[in-house]
Image 1 (cartoon, rainbow, N blue to C red):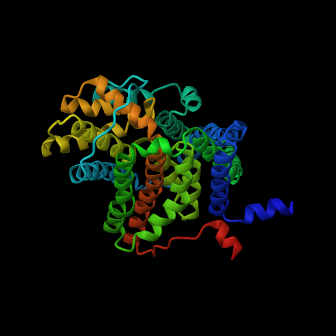
Image 2 (spheres, rainbow, N blue to C red; image 1 turned 135 degrees about the horizontal axis):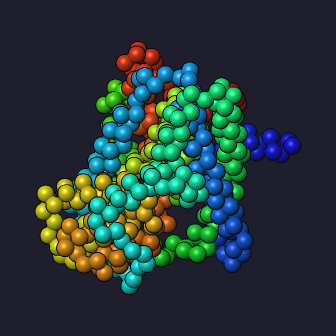
Image 3 (cartoon, helix red, strand yellow; image 1 turned 90 degrees about the horizontal axis):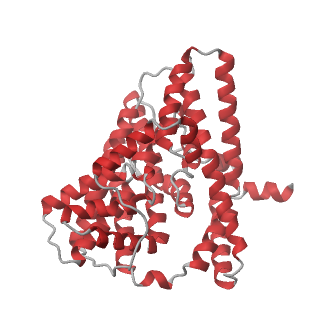
Length: 416
C-alpha cells in the first residue's frame, strides 16, 4: 500500500515522462517484445470505452437537475470561440503555406474513401446527431451521445428526486472509475511509445521533415500565439497561465493517446480543478471534441497547399481564403469520418482541380507522418477545448466583478 500511495502522490506529469522514457528505451532495445505495446492499447481502449457513458450521464444529470438555473449559460460564447479559433487556425496554415512553400514526396497509394463534398460531410454530421442512442454510445459517436443526453436531460426535468440522485450517483461512479484509469496513464503511455518507436522509428519521418515542421509550426503558433490573443481579448489579463496549464494537463495526455474522445474525461477533470461550472463544461467539452478542430483545419489546409505547390498549381489569395473556410467547416465533421482529418484532404484539393487519385496519395503521406501530425493535432484540439470553455466562464466572471485565478491541481493542493 505504501508503494501505491507513493505512486499516486507523485506528479502525474512526472510519471508520464518516466513512462515515455522507459517506453522509448524498450522500443529501441527489445522491439520484438510486442506484448509491451498491449499496455498502450488497453489504456486507450479503457478510456474510449467509458468516456461515452461518462459524457452521457454527466450531461443528462446536469440538465435534469431542478435546482440548477439555466440562466446565464455561456454556451453561445463557447461555440463562437470554437468556430473563430478553427477558422483562424486554417488562415494561419494558409499564411505559413505562402511564407514557406513546401512540396511533398508522394506515396504510391492510400486506403479509404474520401467524402464527395462539404454536403456529404455535413450530412454525416447531422445523421450522427439522430443515430440510435445506444449505438452512439457503443460507437463513441459523441455528437449523437451529446444530442440524446440533452434530450433525455430535459425530458427528465419532471423526474423524482430519487431518479435524479441516482443519475448523479452513476455520474460520480463513472468519474471515479475514469480517475483510476488516468492514474495508470504512465503504463499506457509506455506501451504507446514502445509501439511507435519499435514499429516506425525515426528514419521513416526524415524524408517528410519539412512538411512535418510546417504542420507542427503552424499548430504551435495557434496554441501559443493565436489562442492566447483570443483569450486576452475576452478576459483582459495575462492568458498564459491558463494556456500553459491546459497544454500541460490536457495537451500532453492527448499527444500520446491521439484521441480527443479518450481525452474527454481528462478535460473534464481539468475543468473541475479550474473551478468551472459543471453544468457548462459537461456540455462544452464533449461538444468541443466534435466541432473544435483547429488542428484538423491546419492539417487539411497545409497538406492541400503543399499538394498544389508540388504540382505547380497557382494558389490565388481568394481561393486560399475559400480553402480556409472549407477546411474549417469540414474539420467540424472529422469526428464522424473514418480516418479523421486526412480523408478530408481530397475534398479540399478539389478546390484547385487536383485529381482524386493524387489527393489520395497525399492521404497516404498523412498516414506516414501521422505519428507526429496526429499527436500534435489532437493535443491542440483537446487542450483548446478547455482553454475556450474556461475563457467563456472567466469572461462571465469578469463582468460580475469576480477575480480570475488559475487554481492549482487538486493533487498539488493536497501536497501543500
